[in-house]
Amino acid sequence: MKIGKMKFEANLDYQERAISAITDLFKGQEICQTNFTVTPVDQGGQTKWVDQSSGVGNWLKLLPEDMLANLHEVQTRNGLRLSPELGGLNFTVDMETGTGKGYILLRSALELNKLYGFTKFLVVVPSLAIKEGTMATLMATQEHFRSIYDNVPYNFCEYSSKNLSDVHTFATSNCIEFMVINIQAFNKKDIAVIHQHRDSMMGDKPIDLIAQTDPIVFIDE
Image (cartoon, rainbow, N blue to C red; front, side, top):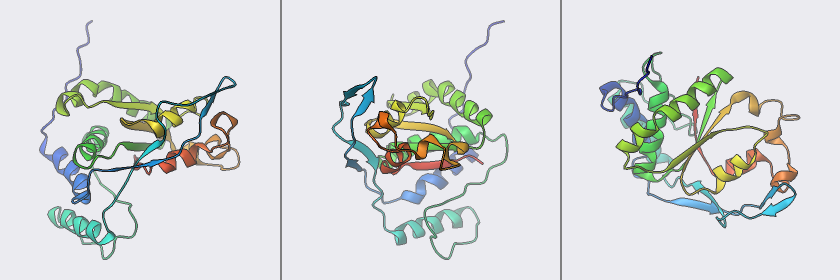
């Protein structure tokens, strides 16, 4: 039996509304990035400098009052009660099961890059099964998304304590970067590798290097 390629619909109204609910939160944001110093990577006992001289991160320049005004606009448009204050930068998008949340998450990230230049995205998932599903969606949608976004280059990986070079690549790349990580990786700070100073990263903690990119974090619940 021959299995054909999956086809994705790019113009579903309810998906477009969900995507705009995310991207419109950042109206007025300039296209910009921040840079920071990154230590070299130890590869097999040899110190290796990456091509980039520094890390690359997102840079949010909007003022809190502008973000709150954008939030009110989105809430009004969707018939939701207006939040009295911003209360941090944590936002929730509710969708029913089977409506393509994984697709919307990824396309929202690419749209945020197109509109505002954001490049670093962390996708936090609650289980190994969902992590595998998210990675499968990333692979299956590559051709579809590149046809929509003019072949914009983007990379994706899943966090693994056994392959910390991916963390270094995530931090230093100039491309759009997705990192998919299981929520359990953050737990038990005394034993989780992500919270430990690692010789292979010249003493850096993986979590600190990820944090310096100021990623937009999507939490799949």
